[in-house]
Length: 204
Ligand code: GTP
Ligand code: MG
Image (cartoon, rainbow, N blue to C red; front, side):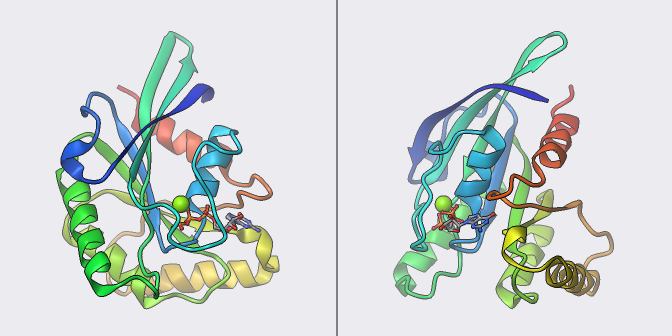
């Protein structure tokens, strides 16, 4: 897939303020600071498309980007969505609840949502908060895949073990494992795989 252009569209505070669902949509979610915005920039090959920060909690709204791709027969376009992260310890209870409500509404009601990419930090052993989030997606019957991030930050052996452990943990509760990807925004690893996956889902 060849990306022709990627543009920031709008940041919405709630599901009902999102753009008209007039094309397919792919959303990125995961723990605060896991690398969602960085991965989006890597995929689009634009440094500052989505705002990144070393301080967790940077992304607070539902951010829509419009991606246009060049196809053999003309052009295609879809939405890419950067969502705020979960599990930031310093977030107040009240904010956490409203985050939950906003995300649940978006995930369950957004009719053009084709797939949710759930990002998992490949430096860590399986975390309960991530597994619980996936279980919720499963319960809501929302299609998702798992994207391991920051694979440049640890030795390949450690990344491999963390990925295997995470998928094994998933096997305990899921009948089928979803598609999974190992990526690094820093080293630009996993871009083709993610784009091929999106391309296959966006074929008419
Ligand atoms: P929130 O919006 O706050 O939830 O964070 P986020 O998930 O969007 O993370 P963001 O992309 O802002 O990245 C967080 C920090 O991790 C930044 O300092 C990035 O530079 C760093 N980072 C992200 N991806 C990678 C990666 O693949 N490799 C390395 N080494 N650092 C990364
Ligand atoms: Mg972000």
